[in-house]
Length: 374
Image 1: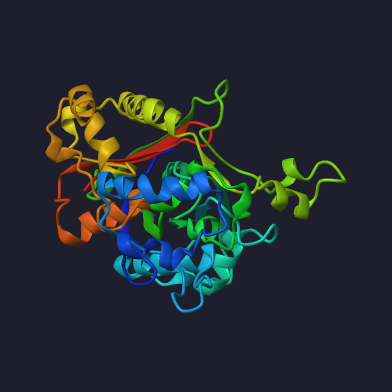
Image 2: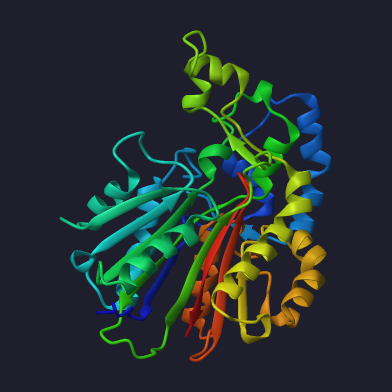
């Protein structure tokens, strides 16, 4: 007997931005001084920093930092909790009803237990299936593919997917060995932000088409023979030798978050386009059939430099692929769920419209996302 694959619906969305909005003029104040950084880094921030902020097009962003003390106000789990609760509320569901809990984040709260189990505890879920996906921007697509496949084949009735981006843990002045900083590590303070997003999915009772339906999810990695585009050390690979442990890692500054900006500028958008094309082909969809493209674009300069290419490839006008980070900053994988939630709640995403939600991750050149027909 042939198995029936059930439609999967998104019945609730949620997002969360911690703290008050931080304007560009207060970034260094909130993140803490870099007065011990090498002179070339301080000169770079003084001369190039304002230009980066202006061209980036982000007017305000959020950090999970207490301005008075500089302490973090959230962990990855508690950041995810806020978006997850909002998605549950929008779906009209209680945490105890969750069958499958999926969390993705770039950094875990502990080496063990998994952060997904901490989120489970915070939500008050006594028992459920749970998974943590260690990933940056492509984590949303990975979680959505697992949830989509598990629900449509009947393994679970529903799934709560959440992503948390706590960039500020890497960006505060107190985190760095400032004497070992380079310019790109400092520049990331002017790009990244904190936030979380979530969706609640439910399998339909019948195989009949339904609204708010996930048409499919897709992930791929093309970095098997490519150098990483984003790195952060401080884990096992840095601790292999007995004479190089945590203090030595700090002294070398190898725990710093770093970015290959040249590779990102050259390769990020082509990799994103390739991934979206693969996803659309797998679903027998054409670019013009999509009403909204929600992409993980960190700055307006990168967006505008590639807008003509993106719209030409997918056969759409610029109104279908907007830059949306001006009031949120770039929250990694959380960005696409934040913008998706905004569109749902504002009514910009209308019944019957189709949206692509897709992210590119430069760490090892992965990408992923999903398509939903509202």
